Image (cartoon, rainbow, N blue to C red; front, side):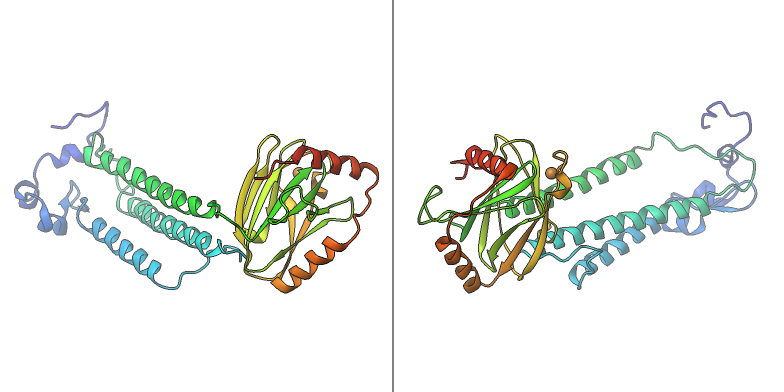
Length: 321
Ligand SMILES: [Cu+2]
């Protein structure tokens, strides 16, 4: 006899405790019991947990595995322009498919519960609790899901943030209130060499960072004042520019074009004007740009920008690696 847990009305369970059919009294479960079900007090059939949900989960898993083997949709992921795009897209698609499988299972279970266990009479239903297999299941499954997400995220992040021994181009990125200063680091001349080329943004005149296509670019970030964040949406990547700390990342832009960049960290009054452009060009065009800038006279600066740029330059001297 099951406990009543304070019920005042007889329950289905109470009724079921008295066998009414041979199936109830004699069956040891299994397929036959699943197929026949349990006949309740009012002659209706009540489904028991059986193999059907397991079959559903198995079918969904097969669908999920098949989906990962086929051409997968983008699930709304934007087009990127760097060598990291396939990896980023892949983890996005994997996450979306995993979320869909979980979602379909949950929606299915909700719908099943709504239909199979809908209210039919005023009889208080049997209460299920202290079901160890179920509790183990809903503890283990989320842990497995989180563990899988952690594994794939850590695996991809370590590859995306990996730095090569000698990138083709190194650019110091200095974010300051409220603009950007880019310094091309000439490997032959060293970080403070005479061939160092600077591009600085001014109010109403965003800096344009020219980069070669299909070459590895290392960005070395620093800030003389507050936290900024270097973000080019098409790179599908952003990284904070933190005072007192040098952040670095590396990527290869595989498509030519001009892409807008923004500061993605609220940094003060004119934060919203901290835009810049990244112009990706073929190697020969990039070489022309570099040689023109190396031979050009040093442009004079004026007003507040001079102060800010000087501060930024001073603060970041020697900060690159
Ligand atoms: Cu900002």
